[in-house]
Length: 414
Ligand code: HEM
Image 1 (cartoon, rainbow, N blue to C red):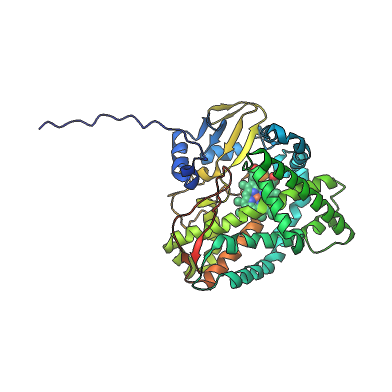
Image 2 (image 1 turned 120 degrees about the vertical axis):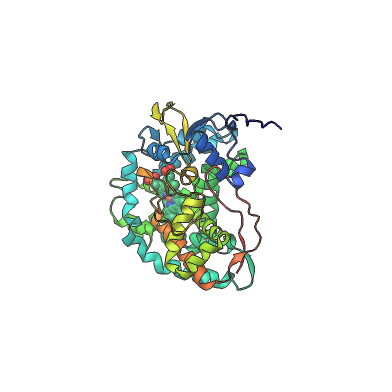
């Protein structure tokens, strides 16, 4: 018998896939790992955008001044012809969101809120957060009952806390969160049909009208909430106009609500799928903070940030042309083996707990400490008071979304 030599096989050709392909959306990491290995800065004709997936390249891009956050114009271009009439005021509101502004305007806008997100300001909410978490769990998480952790805890907890923190009275909470969800459809690209666009555009206008009225009330009669605290700083009407303030307020709940819900749900799912890690946390409850960071890295709520090139710039040998869209896929960079050893393992005892889940640079999430506090409280209470918590089924479905990593439900047995 003659031995046959193995022919030298060429590396398999990389096949581009749509990030919203149901299989990729359900578990994006194998594909994102392959994409990063293929080329960490890759122009995708399918997405008509650059996909940046390498940690070093993405970090550079987040600091690149020519990678502009001002993308309201391109978003407006996507609105169907029939809904254009309603779009003008809504897009004017979006243009005041700090996340869509570049320096120097961005710095001025962000400064109006900065103090209210500092540890000293948000630590005051620790007791409230713990109380609401315990009350929610006492009501919904009856031992032995099968429930949906998303509907029982992950969704209502941030909604209750952030409405209270912002200053929205409980009786307005339902419409407030409905408008926020529709604004999410617009900004996250879930609105596709003309009717959905109209609903989303009108919801943003309703949200602004509502918050403008709340600002007027708080000016007349301050309370213990975010709106009153920012007004008391004296910046509104000085460095930042009242219209800019109200515009930015329409971003706050939207930016914090769903993302924090997704962090809680994704963190609990990761823990329940990794019993050895859950056991480690049960043994050392002080690891709850590390669980939050590892969940942000391993399966965080935000998959990418988007930029538009304001002029040509070079990134890792590629020339990004002025006007090109750039998708900064943080979910891929957080699994880059050049940055994180053994990146596909969920490991709550990592020495290096850094990640890009809250972004980086001037737009680094202003609400990161608040989100961490809410998620940590939820985990601590769940771990301490529900020693038998387990998954009830292992088939999980995810909202179709380019930007968010969002479970539709998480069936558990309490
Ligand atoms: C786990 C929860 C959260 C995640 C994963 C998250 C993620 C992010 C990311 C990735 C960015 C950067 C966006 C970019 O570079 O384009 C960002 C910015 C921002 N986030 Fe968060 N966020 C969370 C919670 C919150 C909360 C609780 C609030 C407020 C209540 C908030 C308010 C904001 C705002 C206002 C910005 C814009 C900051 C700027 O442009 O300077 N976020 N967030």
